[in-house]
Length: 81
Image (cartoon, rainbow, N blue to C red; front, side, top):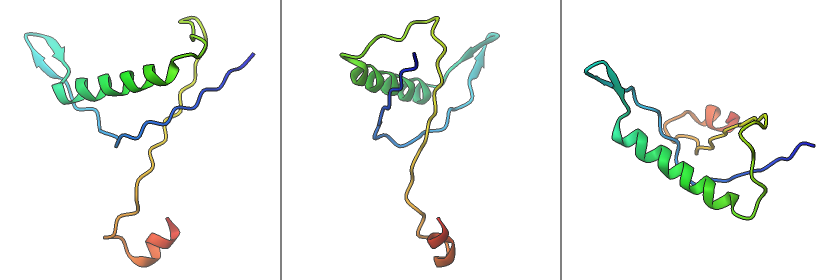
């Protein structure tokens, strides 16, 4: 049986920053850690009351970011978007 959950997170997407290397260990930048924590917290809040997805359950995640069309684009390009 396939279950489908849809989550809407009203947060602007943020690129993942490159890790810094200190003494041979990769360290994730604070800005990236904070953003990932925010998304995890929002996801957890929306999962309340729903069936728990097991670690052995095949899972597919699709992420779609929606942005406004930039005003700097030409009018033709804006209309196509």
